[in-house]
Length: 430
Ligand code: IZC
Ligand code: ZN
Image (cartoon, rainbow, N blue to C red; front, side, top):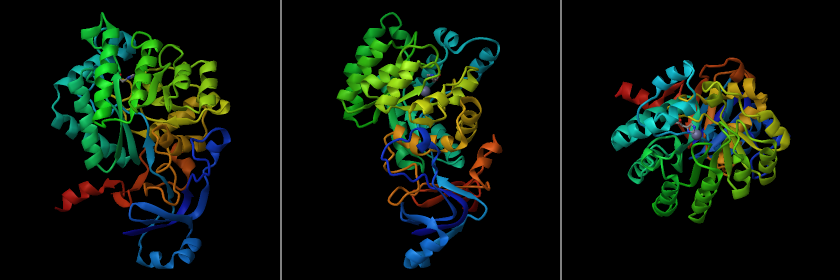
């Protein structure tokens, strides 16, 4: 199947020669083609360019192509969400009410709520229930233009439930159009059973869970919630290094609520990314810049917890490659709207609209080790393409809190048309 997208007001390619996450002024270089076209064959991009150049260079393919007219619209790579807690039981709107009344996230967690509340619900939920529920969430992601999602386990805190979450993510990767990339996060909280002996739980993660994750090929990354009252930097280091020995790439929830030298630890252990970083130190930021650790910033979480956002502007100026993601989870960020989070990055972190587009495409792709195949519109990359119903990319941030997704092409197939999922259209006509 050949597809040709033509007449885009702006074709945002994000083409680049450096095969790594973008830093500093590279983050502002969107490589826009006016009146641009994208030629797709099967699931891959063949070429991008002006209408005239593609028609001149590929006459045979163009003559066979199904043409999608993007007149008046913006065409860009599918969005990549590099940080979600995708698979979970239940919801926590009661905690939102408590926080509006003055309770803090940590007060609630220490009283047995928070991650512990979701763990209870996730342990109780059947595989089928979790699968169906998460499938619906992925439909919502896709309707908002997100074509790849990272998914963390960590609401089991025992092997059978961690495995259930990872298997749900695996089955969704097989069956849903959105690509799901798995992270093991057994070290998300110390379960109540080990409250008085957290090191015993750390040993279980290291000696029992990580080897099983690696053996079953159930995840690519290993993440830890390094936070006062959760896992110490020493425990986190042990867990991340143990994962590394089993081929799991380290990621870390660092410096979210209290400074804990998490950014420094990320750089030290060679983590591919450090996430949150709301209160990361100056030194930690410099260490990350030097190590090339991607900062996955989550301004929706700061918004929802009424906290000050991470210092995104400073991080970019210091040379840290920055990605922006939703942190979709039932406690601190119950939204799949990456477009809204992008607006928060502009409003609350001093990032430019160009930097935000880089942060949610190519840099987010590098944060999950996919920079070679997604995140930009370039020859040989996967044909994951968005067509937005806005006249220019600035309008995407300006008309905020709205969904501008018109068409989504995933692996070379149209999966959202006119803002509607093609799978849902199919059901109506059946
Ligand atoms: O369920 O509260 N911060 N993990 C670390 C979370 C937030 C998710 C949750
Ligand atoms: Zn998280």
